Image 1 (tube, rainbow, N blue to C red):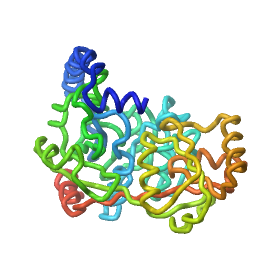
Image 2: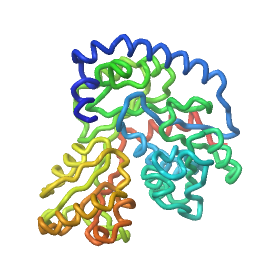
Image 3: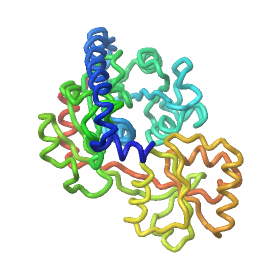
Image 4: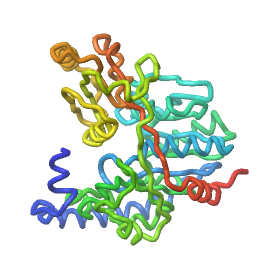
Length: 355
């Protein structure tokens, strides 16, 4: 899927041209859907912040949700988070609290990898999972009626709940792809949907630089703009032991990832001075439940004489269930850094004032 997207969705191509009539039809349908559902949206008794995107694939929504939730908590807000729980056992069941103010309540099999990552990174902040957002937020507020705000992760297209602040995230290198709507392009909705956004966040994999989607491109949307970057923090074992990334520079490493953009994982490690023998690449949200697959990775680790299996933080809990891998596992932890935190909190306080 990644190669197909690179060839046909992220840039103009003959196939994209052929599919453009379908893309235009889908664009019109998405406009009608947004207008209809927005007019019927439920407004909960607390403020709501949506963090989403209009492109397919990774754009940094979940790291920004973690970052903003922690920032608001440190500023005195009582916040909760609603996540779909994508590919977790609870996704299609009744909404479920996976963490409360006292800690985690569910494991990765039930919660899903991204939801568990949010809950693990945000101690003291309740997190609810469930596909049906109105029911999920209702449950969160029933348990914690004192919440000042609920953050909805991946909710720009989930229009059943009215929101006070709408954040739309983009990957700096991908931008808007070829500017067309699915199936002719990379967009879930036409770019006119950005009229509903309160803030555009551009997430960079490297220190800020002019990319294909440069500053002039983003300025055209006439929205507040925030540049952010993910930077490595450290590595952590399945048992929670923290280590400096530099301690891995002389180690024989194998990489494992089940994320939308494995190239960014490699680029981050190269920038940190690491090298590796092999990279096991899997699709985003890969479950790592296939026993033969796990045995193959363990066998190759022995064959290569690898000392460490280095994975992403999102994949750690799923891989650590397997005893033949657990003792070798380390996960790279990343932190989001934003260029103008003061301006961000100024916008938050304007749209979501503390009572």
